[in-house]
Image 1 (spheres, rainbow, N blue to C red):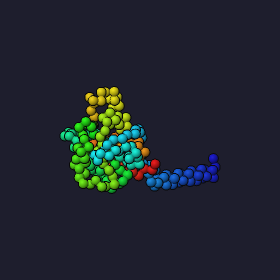
Image 2 (cartoon, rainbow, N blue to C red):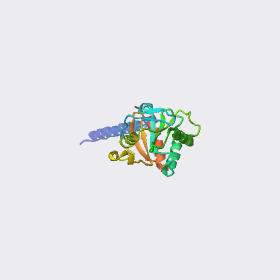
Image 3 (cartoon, one colour):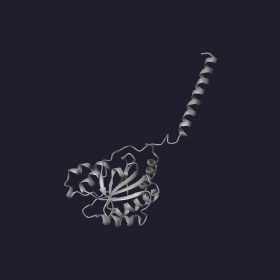
Image 4 (cartoon, rainbow, N blue to C red):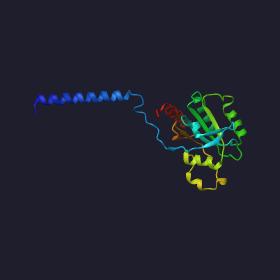
Length: 211
């Protein structure tokens, strides 16, 4: 191989490396190129419940919003107060964003009446009820509530749907995150500060995510 040929190979090789380097630099400066998107874990079924104001809340009210959902009951003295203290922190961080909401389902619709849910709302957010973001505390048919937890939000084993609903009880510390297209995108431990931090980061990511 002659010197001229070697020089050409080195020249073309160097030029190729230069172009390749410039290409990756350009990509790395493109917003979101290296961001890892949250996986789609499932799809939320249609639903319709009653909120703390006695008004119907359905999947149509949440469509187009990023929302966090959970299961609790108003008389709980165990994990629920700790969970909802953390949930209140999430609410306070995103309450100015009209594209964000929280959907808290009662695990005990047989005892958690609409007035009790209203009292619980005041306990969580006081008079802060006119912010763009909304925190819904909902009740409804127990079977429907529990099927949502198991089939839409993956907050309980779907196999438990075969149990007698009157003997069934959901008491979970986990939160589920849903995107604007009603797709399940994450599950988080509502008692762990690190998990709450991850949840808040993922909420921000979904609020900015393009359809």
